[in-house]
Length: 344
Ligand SMILES: C[S@@+](CC[C@H](N)C(=O)[O-])C[C@H]1O[C@@H](n2cnc3c(N)ncnc32)[C@H](O)[C@@H]1O
Image (cartoon, rainbow, N blue to C red):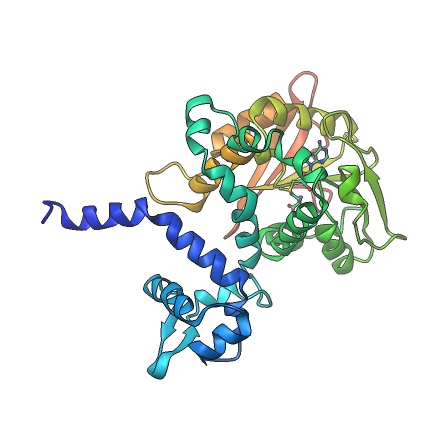
C-alpha cells in the first residue's frame, strides 16, 4: 500500500477526472436529469426514455452516485440529489448550460492542453485552425448553441447587475451582449431604460430584444463601439482576451463613453490563496480556448488603468463579481464622480 494512501487515491481520481466530466456530459445530454425532475425512476425505464443502453446507464450512474449527483434506491431506481438537480434544464440556476460550454469543441481543445502550456497560446486555434469566435461564425448551429448557453447562465451570473438600482441610468450599451438576454432582462425590470445591443453581426442577427426600446448594432469591438450610452456593460468579455487585446477593447469603450458614463464589468476575480476555486479552472479554460485569462483584483486594477479607466468599486457576488469604473481624464482625475444611480 502506498505510504500516503489518501493522497494516492486523490491523485488517481484527479488523473481520471475527465471520466467524471464526460460521464456528467453524456448523462446530461441524454436528458437523464430532466427525466428525474419529478422523482425517482427505474433504470430500464430511464434508459428507454433517454435512448440509452440500460446496462451502460447503470454503470455511468454508479460513477455519478459516488460523485453525489444521484442516489440509488431499491430495485435499481435512481434519483437526483440536491446537487445533481442543478443539471436539470428547467430549474433556476441550472448548470445544464455549463455542460454545453464545457463539452463538444471545448472539450476537444483540452486534448491539446500541452500546446497551451508550452506556448501560452490557445489549443483551440491549433486544433481547429482558427480562433474560436471565427470558428463559431462559420458554424451557425454551434454558434447558436454557444449564445443560448451564455444566455442561459445570465440569471445567476448577471445577478449583481440585474439587482442594481438602475433608476439613474437611461441608456445601457451591452458590448458583446450575445443574443440580448441580459438587455431583455434589464429592460423588462426597468421600464424607463433603453438599450443598445452590440456584438458581432452574425450574433446580433439572432437577437431577440424589444425593437422599440433597444437598438441592435453589429460590429467589432476592436474597431469601435456605439456612442450614446450612459452605462456600458462588458459581461464576460475581457476574460476572453489577453491583456493587450483587453486594453484595446477598454480603450474603444472609453472613447465612446460620455464624461459622466460608467463602465460595469461582470467577471470573475481570482482569489489570491492556495485553495481550490472554480475561477482558477476557468482561468485555464480561457487560455486553452481563447488565449484569455481570469484576473486577480490587482490585475483588474492595472488592466483598467492601462485601458483608460479607474476602478471605483468591486462587488463580489456568489457566481460573479461586478467591477465598476469611470473614465480617467487627462491629468489623472476620474470623470463624472457624481452618482448616476447605476454608476458605482
Ligand atoms: C463569453 S460571450 C459573453 C456574452 C454575454 N455578454 C454574456 O455574458 O452572456 C463573449 C461575446 O463576445 C462576442 N464577441 C467576440 N468577439 C467580438 C468582437 N470582435 N466584437 C464584438 N463582439 C465580440 C461574442 O460573439 C460573444 O457574444
